[in-house]
Image 1 (cartoon, helix red, strand yellow):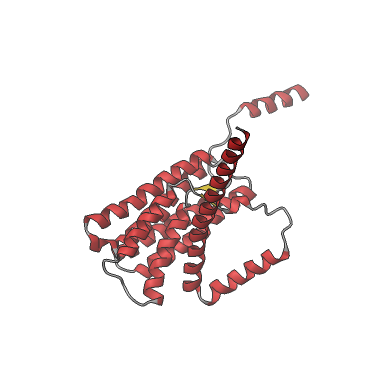
Image 2 (tube, rainbow, N blue to C red):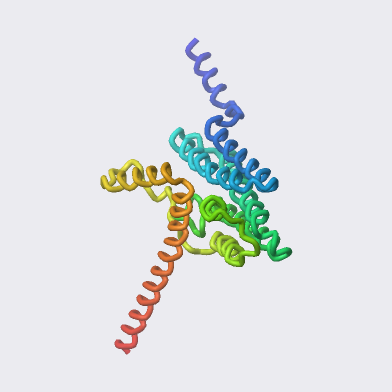
Length: 261
């Protein structure tokens, strides 16, 4: 009897694992994809504010699906691929169509080209991230959700705060092109992966977090625009500072070599 039970256990262990998917993280990913699809339809129908807020809300699900997968140890290759495809639609295609219908359409072929540039650079950014995701923690290039949120925040800023819809605004054309190029650049941007939530942090970090939540709750349109603008701007400024320091170090090393000679 004991031998039979052992043989049965061995046969069970030799069986292939049951095929299937983890429901919770993938369901959260699909929620983000739904918001992206809704944003596309809203942008086409001229409901720019609905589209912009849908893209911003999709960031919540984009953050939750990865967090839930890591906490529950349900990260799979299927989930990673689904998340990448969802990001391309929600944070690549949706903001591109939104900006095109909002202002880039006035520029004709140039506006079309810049709109496509955003999608293409977003796809390249996601492909590079999928290859390097296990190598580095910091983001190489502006994350596609950050670029999409910046586009959505600009639309909200013009419509809800300035109460205007710009026509042939060259600044927005150049800004869209800049965001596209930042996504495929080698500039380093910080992300939540760099934060170890298991370690103790200073109390002032919790206070800042509470202040940000209060800021978003009171004036969400201004808060989103301010926060995402600071994130993108600080990423550029920080990389410029790093570049200047590297040049100074190179000059100092060369000076020391010349002195030795």
